[in-house]
Length: 429
Image: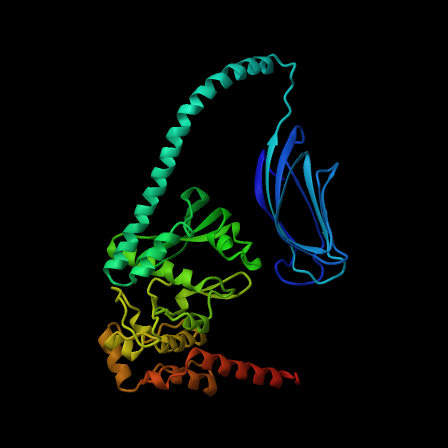
C-alpha cells in the first residue's frame, strides 16, 4: 500500500535461488481508493516452468498472462484501481520472479465543482502562456544539462590526471577510463545518505547507511540475474574525511580495483582477487563484512594495487600501512604480492580464532614488530586452534615468500580439512 506515489520491488520467496515453493500473490494499491492509478511494472526476471503461470491484472482486465518461458526486462504500463500479481510454480523447481513497480495515483475530481470549472479556464490560459515559455526554457535547459555533464567530467578528470601524474595508469588506461567514466557514475539525486546512521569510521573516511533509487551501474553493466536485485535498495556510502591529492588517489585506486574485480557473491574470495592480479594490502578482520545470511565479503580496497606482471611490486606507497598485518618484505622493502596478502590472511586467521584479539598487543611501533619477526618469532597459537590449523598459519608467515602457500593451495588445504571433519561427523562417500 502506498500514498499517491509508490516505487519498489516484489519477488518470490527464494529468488534468485532455484527452489520449490515459489508461489506468491501480491496486491499493489493506493491508500485512498477513490480515483485511479497508473502502474508501470517491469518484470526484471521471471523463470516460469512448463506448468507455471505469471499473471498481472488491474482488478478487471488481465494485463499479461505468461506460461512456460523466461522473461527478462519486459515493461507493462496500465491504469486501474490496483495491480494484482500472481505466480504459481507448477510444483517445479524455479529461480522465481523479480518485479519492479512504479505507481502514480490520481484522485477523482468533481467536474460540477465551481473550483474545477475555474481551474479549466486557467488551464486553457496557462497552456497558451506555457507554450511560449517552454520554447525559451528548452534552450536554457539543454545548455544547463551539457554544462553539468562537462562539470562532472572535469571532476573525474581531476582524479584521473592525479593518477596519470603518479604514473599509476598507462596512457591507454587513462583514455579508457575517460571513455567509461559515466558508466559507473551515480547521480547524487539517486542517492539518499542517512548521516545519522554510521556503519563505521576509518582513518580517512566514514561509511554511512544509504538508499539507491533506480538501477545501480552494476545492474546495468553486468545484466546478470544475480545483480538485478541491486536497484531501489539499501547501500553503504563511503565518504572521505577530506579530499586532496592523496585522498583522490586512494579513492580512484579503490574504484579501479572494484571495477576490475566486477561482481562476485562473496566480494570476494582472496583466490579470485589474486587471479585479477590485485594485491589487497589491507586484509584484516576489520575489513570483512557479513551479510544477514552470513556471507563473508572483503571490503576496503583503498590500499589495493594492480600488478599486471604478477611479480612482486612496490607500487604507489600510501601514507598509512597496517604494519601488524604486513609481511616482513612488505614492512622492510615495501614489496607487495599475493604472498604478502597470504601473510595477512594468516594474521586474519589469528584474529578469527582468538575472537578478535589484536595481534602483537605489546608492540606500539614498526621497529618492535620487525625485530620480533626477524628473530623468527610469530604470533602464539590461539587456544581454540589445533595443530593442523596453526601449522597453516605458520606456513603463511614463512619469512621467504616463495615458501608460503598461495591462495589456491590454501583453498585445497581447507577443503580437505572440511572433508575430513564431515567424514568424522558420520557421513560416508
